[in-house]
Image (cartoon, rainbow, N blue to C red):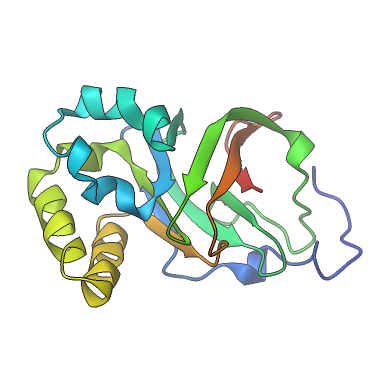
Length: 182
């Protein structure tokens, strides 16, 4: 999977990492969703298992990932996100979608994706705070994203202003990397 990069679009995932964009996995289950999902009133009164079962109906997906700390890298030249254990991505890494086994799709409607450990669904204080902030408009939505980060989740921006569907997959060879691409 690691080959020499030949174009700017393929280069330097490692330098694209924002030090704030890390993912802490403690339950072994990661959720990838549009940022609105945690504020969606249709999902408000569901318990954790019901919420997880409804993910595909609301354009989100979940997958297993080993516990640990991951970097969340986004190449600024394309619509690809790589989630990999910290320090495991070389400067010459090239993201090749065919190297990933599909685990689902995520529908992005708000230009912003959140990636978080499923354990957050059990944190009633976090869920309440997220929804409260979200209802406060644009500034509140920024606070909501910051809450995700303070709880070990990650936020990635810059997707289309129009609705788009992205594929989500796990690295076929190691199962320790998660890829998101459009």
